[in-house]
Length: 357
Ligand code: PHE
Image: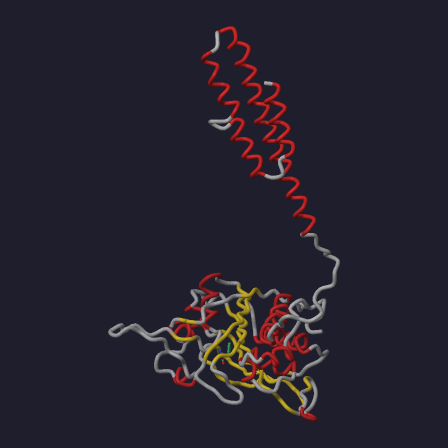
C-alpha cells in the first residue's frame, strides 16, 4: 500500500496539466483503477485482515483524491498567473493620436442646447418620429381642412386597403411632443424636445429630414416676458457673446396666441456671419403663448395654467454658429465633411467648461 501511495502521489506532483491529472485519477481511483481493484479484494479477506486493510485503503483513496484536487487548483492558479502576465496593459500610455470618429454638428449642437436649457431647469422630453395625425395636427389646433397641413408638405404613412382611420405621419415638427409631455407629466412643466422632423422639400436650404428643438414652459403666471428672457439668455450662451439683440415679429401659428417669430441681429460682412452686430436680421425660431385649446388637448386646465412654447431649427443654428454653408451636406455622410466639421466625442459641452472649444 505504501508503494501505491508513493507511486500515485509522485505522479500527481509531476503532472503537467489537467489531462495528465485525469489519466492518473482513472488509473488510481477510477472504476477499474488500481486502488479500486484492491478494494474489491477486501471481500476475499478474513474479517481480521479486512479490519486492517479496509480503513487503510479508504484512507489511501481519500489521500489520492485530495492530492488530485490540490494539484488541480494549483494548476488553475498557475494558468491564471500566466494569463495575467501576458494580458498586462499599461494604462498610462497616451491614447491614439488620430481621432477615429467625430460627433456630427447636429449632435454637438443638440448637446449644447440641452446644456443651456438644463441650467434653466428644462428637462429633455422625446417623442416618436412616426406620429399620429392627432398629435401632429389636431391636438395643436390644426384641424383637417387647415391650410397649415398642406403648407407642411407632410409625409403620410401607408394604410391597409379599407382602413379608414387617418394615417400616421412622419412628424412635421417637434410640437407634438408638447402634447405628449403634457399628457405624461401635466402642469407645471418645463421641457425641451430635440429631434428629427420631416417635410417633403428639397433644395439649397431644405432637406426632407431636419432637426428642431421645441421648448415648453407651463406655470401659473408665465408671460411673453419670460419667453423673451429665456430666449435672450439662450442666444447669448449659445453664440457665446455678451450681448445680442432679438426682434420679435408678430406672426401666426395655430397652436400659439399671440405668436411671434424671432430674428437675431447679425452682420454678413465679408461673407462671414457675426451675431450681435450689423444691420441684418436672421430668423431663428417661431414662438408664442400656448393656445388654450392646445393645453386642453394635453389635459391641462387652461383657466388655471398658461405657458410659452418655441420651436427652433437645430441644423440652422448649427450652420450659423459654425459657419457651415450647405445644409444638404449635413446628411451626405461624406467622411471628409464629417472630419472637417465634426467634434471630438470627448469634449462634452457644459456651461462651466465651455460649450465649444
Ligand atoms: N412648430 C413650429 C414650426 O415648425 C414652430 C413653433 C413651435 C412655433 C412652437 C410656435 C411655438 O414652424
